[in-house]
Length: 434
Image (cartoon, rainbow, N blue to C red; front, top):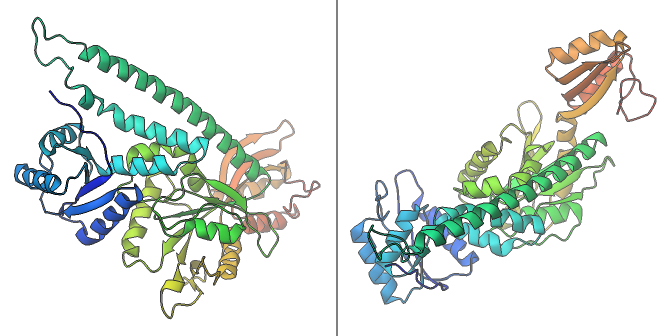
């Protein structure tokens, strides 16, 4: 029979070195993750393997070492910095006589304590239930039917099926609620698009200073902390630019190495703010020695959500922590701003960043709906030649109804050359329907 050990905060951490990983960097991040979850870290057990053991992940010898260490320091919890299968978790709990949590469970626990809004709580609950569904059997193994025969057909299977059905029902309900949230966010983005209000999304590795930068740019009071995953709930606020044009900024959840797929799926509605943004501000901790690896991890997550091709401006934050570093703008060989060095805490370089955002937004493609008269066939052909037309239909009077994606300045120039006037939103401009 198998009874799950009671939970606790006194934790023994286990982190193994596999080929192709940065052991020390990953170990330091793992300790910070555990402390962010409220764990009292007693010790860290290391080791190396070429590949995980199918049954225990760590192998029988290392499992005995971990069990002895857990008993010696009276650990109530053993946390692995790796993704464990349900059977591996079950086997390890039997061997270690302590509750076992893998990296995915640890991150989910942190998310559960950080979620504040109704939407955030829905997203976290969905991810937790999806993770739990495959591990439900662990707590009921003592009731499960192990063999056939009279007297051994206990209520285990009935209880398991009941719990599974309840979880499936709750998952379905959460998905429907989140789909409604996704629809509301989509309608908000469409409304901003029609009002020609571009969205700038902050993305980056967790604890890079996104929320502090968000507050500095917008004057808002979003919760900011040096803890990992301090922000889970996406907040959208207006940001003033020197040009006076309306721009909104979205603060999003931080990314991390091996972000659980259940979380990526659950936070789909939130992450779409980044995917559909006119410009991404990739916030990078300039003081982090591992920043290049962090950049690669963020790029990988952006690829998972379909935002890998979104226009991106790198923001190297926390320059105040680097002696001799000053606020500046880096441009590429074509003169386009690619990187801005700032300090969100001191405010140094924020005006440079605002100017860079305005400059990049003028170059970023934006969707717009046009109605061109039949006489503007040449302009229509130019738009098709530049692959700017997303949709087209024809009116009863022969006019062309187009949905296009082009940088505003470029679209303005093409319309002026075609004799259709400025696209400043004036009601008398014949090329603009809405």
